[in-house]
Amino acid sequence: MTDAVAPATPGPVARWVEGARPKTLPAAIVPVLVGLGVVRPGPIAWDRAILAAVVALSLQIGTNFANDYSDGIRGTDEDRVGPVRLVGQRLASPGSVKAAAFISFGVAAACGLALAAMTSWWLIPIGLAAFLAGWFYTGGPQPYGYLGFGELFVFIFFGVVATVGSAYVQGGHFIALSWVAAIPVGLLATAMLEANNLRDIDGDVVAGKRTLAVRLGRRRAGWLFVGSYLGAGVAVICLSVARPPAALGLLGLLAAIPSCRLALSEESGRSLLPMLKASGRAQLLVGALLAIGLAL
Image (cartoon, rainbow, N blue to C red):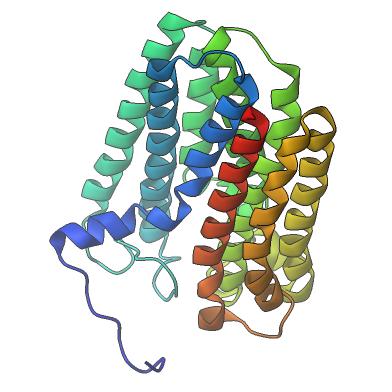
């Protein structure tokens, strides 16, 4: 299919599924898996694990819908490649997409409250901070995603907060190893965001969206993408000092090689579409293998 052929319009249900951006969901699943790996060989409270997973997935989906809404009403999604944009492509009304975002955040809040009741009420302000970070990524008068701070947000909330928090809710106390385990998880999430931002550089420049990829430029942003994987590999090696089987996570990094080659190539725009899916696959493989290695 050439660029001149318009993609088929998804159906009423499919458009909402695609609008939730399922390729990004490994960013929510992986920290929970790794957090569970950290607490082994101790017992796992599966009710808390499931609630943590629902919180993470709901926050991710809510953030995706919030970004779709905010970018759509700003007009920055008018001419884009990549995932479905419900508002920008006029597949759904802004109000319905905004409602979907708040419903998702509401599910996260309900499950988060249940977790807080089981463990610590300090989870409530942390959850509120995660909600605000998800909304103001592209929402509000000065969205920080437009200023180049998106990667920092992803590392903190989908790396440190999600991984350390997933381990914390199991036993009600902080586990030192979870802070180290959060580093590769955060860097994998950062690589996924960078895959998205690399693809969108040209459109973001036109829309005035100054992501970190736009600020760095195509070549240096490509190296940031590769560097995120290299940093994740170094962090996994550090984890293997404490728990040698954690080195299994390095095998998952092999799945990142094709997207790293694309990142360092001269390709741009639509040619970089495979990177997001490949990044999600690599993130899931590294995360699952790392969790297994930590648990052994």
